[in-house]
Amino acid sequence: MILLLWDIDGTLLASGGAGMVAMRLGLRDALGIDGSLDDIEFAGRTDRWIIRRIFDKFSVPHTAENYDRYVAGYIAALPGALRANPRARVLGGVRELLAAVAARPGVTQGVLTGNLRAGARAKLAHHGLWDYFPFGAFADDAELRNDLGPHALARARAHTGTTFAPARIWIIGDTPHDIACARAIGARVLAVATGSHSRDTLAAHAPDALLDDLADAAAFWKLIS
Picture 1: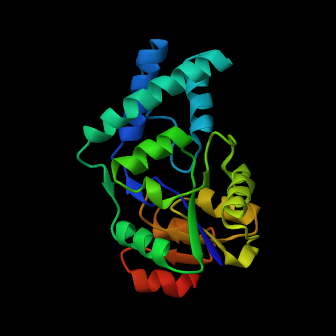
Picture 2: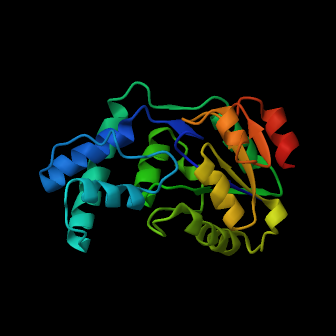
């Protein structure tokens, strides 16, 4: 059996900046701080990592209470930010590919994402994709992306009853962080140049496979089968 672990932002979806808008609104509504987040790195990072940098920038104490208040504000703002953003979309070929994976014997899929679980659900459900993923690993599990892999593997094993050999595990993502995350668990990695990193930048990190996008289903299956 093959295990596919999908990144979300820049790989499956383009949210058009809706996530950053929701994080800024959460900061304002939950903590009374109105400020720019433009200087904070988002691509490939986990929400917990991002929130730590936001708190550092605005001198917010790193307490559980502040974290919970901020996350609640962010999650509350996210659906509205997605609805209001006409650029929020499913990337080319993704919807058809997820449906094909779900129907294909011997292949199972989950997410491995830097989003908090509630944020991942909001983003995927907005586009009708959440039900394709019966398990995953999320920022709730770890602050560092490289620590997410074992959580995804444990849930994949619990869901399928299968222990996946590293050569049968593919992480699919759009950043060098996704490539490093795959290497941390000995998995293979398919990089797609659909996010903020160019094909050349991704190639420099030596993924096992590299595609410009996911529009060509035949090319995808040829690589991962």
